[in-house]
Amino acid sequence: MGRNQLQPGEGPGGADGFGPDADDTGCPILHVDMDAFFASVEVHRRPELRGRPVVVGGVAGRGVVSSASYEARRFGVHSAMPTARARRLCPAAIFLPPDFAAYRAASDAVMKIFAQTTPLVEPLSLDEAFLDVSGARRLLGSPAQVARQIRARVVGELGLTCSVGVAPTKFVAKLASSRAKPDGLLVVPADRVVAYLHRLPVGALWGVGERTEQALRRLGVTTVADIAHSRPETLVSALGPAVGSHLYELAWGRDPRAVTPHTPEKSVGAETTFETDIADPEKIRRVLLELAGRCATRARRAGVTGRTVSIKVRFADFRTITRSRTLPDPTDVAREMFETGWSLFDALGTREQVRLIGLRLEGLQDEAAPRQLVLGEREHGWRDAERAVDAATERFGAAAVRPASLLSPGQRAAEARYRDESPS
Image 1 (tube, rainbow, N blue to C red):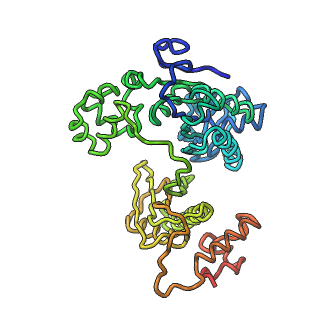
Image 2 (tube, rainbow, N blue to C red):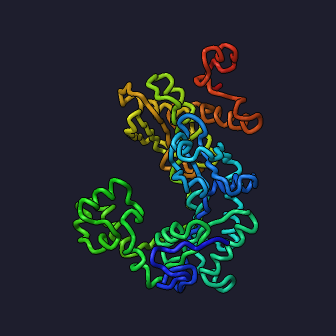
Image 3 (cartoon, rainbow, N blue to C red):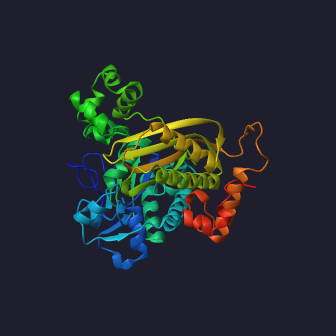
């Protein structure tokens, strides 16, 4: 089934208390993480790629790596890396554009296996989830035995591999799965959690990004043990009340969060990285309109609306800013999202070169929630028009209907049906 990766100094089978065969008493939480998911799905679909470096992501210009096989990772390629750099590091790699429909289908199959194991499944993304298997012991065995069964089913039924962390808390289980990669299993016993954590660098903790790590290093804090033995008020003073207290608790292995099935998405969004930096407001406006359409479509498909619209702007020098505005009422309408996003961008008053722009709808709620009618609002407006577009797109494809603002002047003249942008 693959190797079980242990921390430096650990013997095979958990000689010092950690490993795939360690005591899993009091460890009902599993974190299951698929290995190089997108790349693995592609290799499974194309067996001739097995054993070769495979990179999935934007394949041209300013594309970004979404997933890299472990053969590619040996050359230093990793997710979120610019594709151009990945090509320099591994010119022999096979570069493939993402096929999200295939990944969604594979994810659904994986999640079905999880759901057949326990009803307590909390998906985090397409390729990872927390499971609480405390209720499965009588039928399926101990947590580690359940983890082995899941791994066997995933590889046997889907031809994919996953890594599993088994621990008493979500945080430690997720940490363990990352240390078990690829294709491994790691159990962190309940009575060994603190010993396990305190050997790790501060960057292993949730919430420790580059800036937080720099702030901790200025305090002389480089390991999780250093955090645990710091004065809480010192951490709070340096990092703020929320982060300081959060890291102190994690450093002692305290994480009271339960596995919550079917956690709703907190936001939907879309973003675009330009092939070349642009400063033309009209081009940025057109891209924002397209992004708003994508966000709105995703929201309607998910059956949610949101009250907060935010934009992300990354300039040519990689400086990134965000701006947001909360609307009086929730929306799933692209026109409202676009107008809000454009006003946020316009208020920046910038003419700098832009590398990336994104738009996001936040504060999501079920679309069936009561919606306050606006005085003078037309009975049939943008919402109905966009739902009609959804139906047309579903039937005829994405190219069948496009907003007039996304057409060139020549296209507008040729496609007269788009001249009037107001819904009838």
